[in-house]
Amino acid sequence: MGMISEMLSYPFLVRALAGGILVSLCASLLGVSLVLKRYSMIGDGLSHVSFGALSFAVAFGWSPLKISVPVVVIAAFFLLRIRSNGKMKSDAAIAMISAVALAAGIIVTSMTTGMTTDVSSYMFGSILAMSKEDVRLSVILSFFVLGLFLICYNKIFAVTFDESFARATGVKVSWYNVLIAVLTAVTIVLGMRMMGAMLISSLIIFPSLTSMRVFKSFRGVVISSGILSVVCFVIGMMASYRYSTPAGASVVMVNLAAFLVFSAADCGARMIRADKKAGHRTAGKEELQ
Image (tube, rainbow, N blue to C red; front, side, top):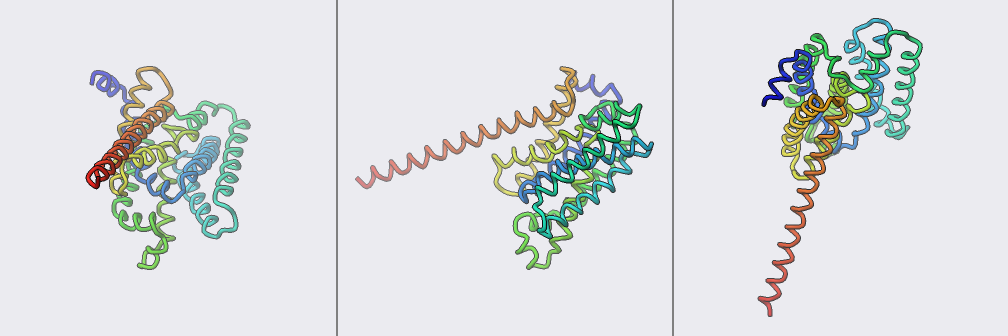
């Protein structure tokens, strides 16, 4: 508790915790649907698009978040259209767009002077990069993402597990796929300041994969993923403050540790169930004899 009180005495850490907790929660909830629908790499691709957009915004003196949000949303819609048309494999489309966006951002960075530190914070993340305006916008958009997710929870559940059945029951599958992609794009842009383009996709993938090791129902995975994401983020921030390590990398390593713990618990539970089944079979054979 003493460390938390000490951290809260610094305004930039308070901003980082406030923005980071909300973004982590949004990313973890959306990550469940993305992982189950095999959209996981969209997060990585959109983070590179966001880096390119942020590089252009910083170079021309525009507001980074106000420019990158619409650009990344358009990219998410474009990736979904490519996937639905089937003319190009989705992983190939994501790789192509990621490479082009990242290359464009690097070129702009190299040709513009005086912006190396700012763009570097977007690439690798920085707790010092969260301004009051960024936190305010992050809070507003995070509540918008969470609100839409909760309102459309049942539809998202249906679309995630069986698009054909959902379409047959009258659900606008394409519209909800676009909604998931748009909410993911907004979340990625918001998390860029904290985690960086190289690590932001981990907030989407790790909590859901970790929760799926123990919980089997969609609701259970969603709830566990949200709680786990927030806890891992706070612990990662504490580790970053204590050992002076990069915040984004610290959060990722804590998520990895949680994944290993949950995986070990899952393996242990399976071994116990297997032993019980073996015991029941042995007991049954003895009774027959």
